Image 1: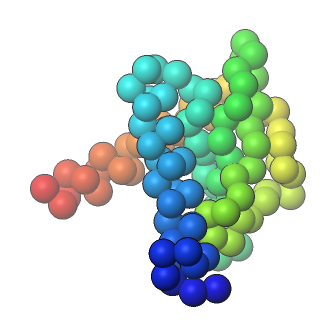
Image 2: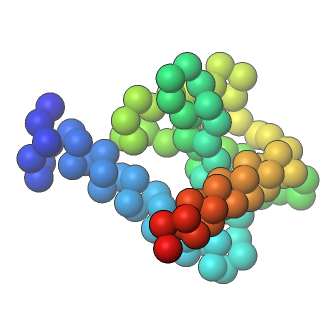
Image 3: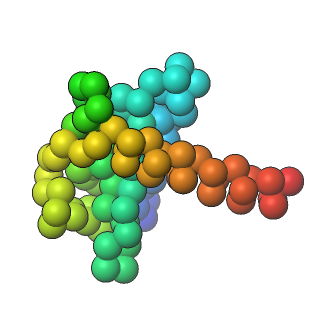
Length: 105
C-alpha cells in the first residue's frame, strides 16, 4: 500500500484522472452517459458514473478504486435515478469546479 508508481495511491490517482477525462470528454459532447455524480456520505463522497439514459431516468454504477469507495445505502452498487437529479448533481459539480477555477486564475 505504497505511494510509488505501482502503489495504491498512484492507482487511485490514475483512476481519478481517467474518470475526470471521460467526464470532460462527455461534457464536451453534451452527453450525460459517462459523466459522474458524487454524493456526500460519512466523511467522504460516494461516486457513481452514469451508464445509461432512458427518457427521464438514468442508470448509475458505483465507481471503485477512487479511495474510500463509499456506496450510498439508498442507491447501492447500481441504481436508476431521475434524470433531473443526475443533471442537478452534475451541474452543481461543474459549477463548483468553475468557481474554484476562477478563484485560482
